[in-house]
Image 1 (cartoon, rainbow, N blue to C red):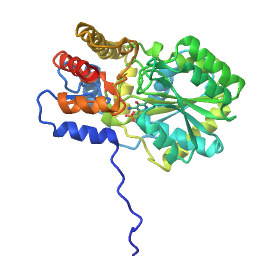
Image 2: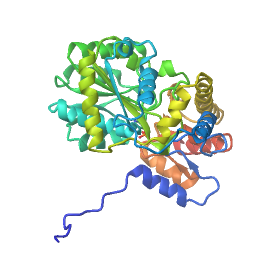
Image 3: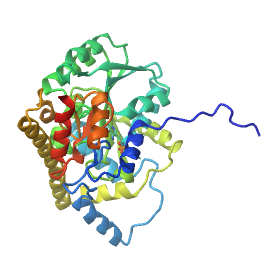
Image 4: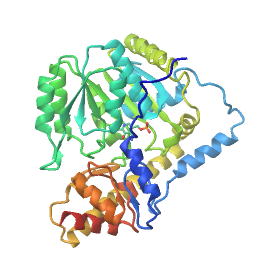
Length: 401
Ligand code: PMP
């Protein structure tokens, strides 16, 4: 047969390259702040205690089997996931104006949403923040959608460039889709205030723009599930058609189990029913059936009030540990009299801190202190703990002087 003479080597995603470098670093002081996965104070991956319990329940269940799930995924999981993001008593739930399908985690939910937009809003442009999660651009480009990036992070003030956000909305092409981070914006850790969300919604409403929310950190960001769902719920109450990608990687620590949901909220039940049939079709020609294990674990927790309470405690524990590390870093930098204002580290929320360190500074502390952060100065705060936080602060202090 004919060969593949047009084949080229696809450069490795920089985040995986960085992880490879960390793994090859034999220094006992090496600190991995690259990958966005929670670590306990011992620096090790943490299986949520509530997940351990749910696993035992699943293991003992005589009815459990390995049959295919329905095409839409585990129905009770989907319903619970929709209630989690929209709120138990959301009119959208009560009026059955929503469509929820199980996806291959948040990534899969983004991808199905992208294909849905490409099919039913083929002339729409997708607006993404600069910076954003590294995979957003790739996923929406893969679906063939035009993308426009706009400045979200103001490097001078180390805060959101809200004026630019509003200006972009005011001049966006009609019918565009705005990819919004539901909470704990990745990588900046900065979310609009309620007042700012209101301003965003006002312009989107008057200009007929569509929100697409990516929700990868509900409950993990603030420690409170409702607080972190505020923006999505607000847009739903305002009457927008909202599409939302949900990930359970972080808030259940189920990274490898690929547990997610795509939820769409529409004007009436009939539209929701059609959308769900289209979501299911897109799943059929990409993955056929979603994986069962993670969805079963989450479902077992959702069905049991005591386990839900325990899950909320686990969420609090993770988010509290991360915010304590943020405070510790700032405290140490103040003690070291490190030049500059570092208060943005504690005003940012979620997994990441966008430190404001430049690419050469990031490279320098990797060489000298074995601290691994992404090129644009993003640090996964979960990688810090009582043993290594001082070294991290010393590294930052050294590099900015
Ligand atoms: N969206 C955002 C903003 C994320 O940060 C992540 C995880 N890094 C995801 C989606 C998807 O992750 P997963 O596919 O593991 O759910």
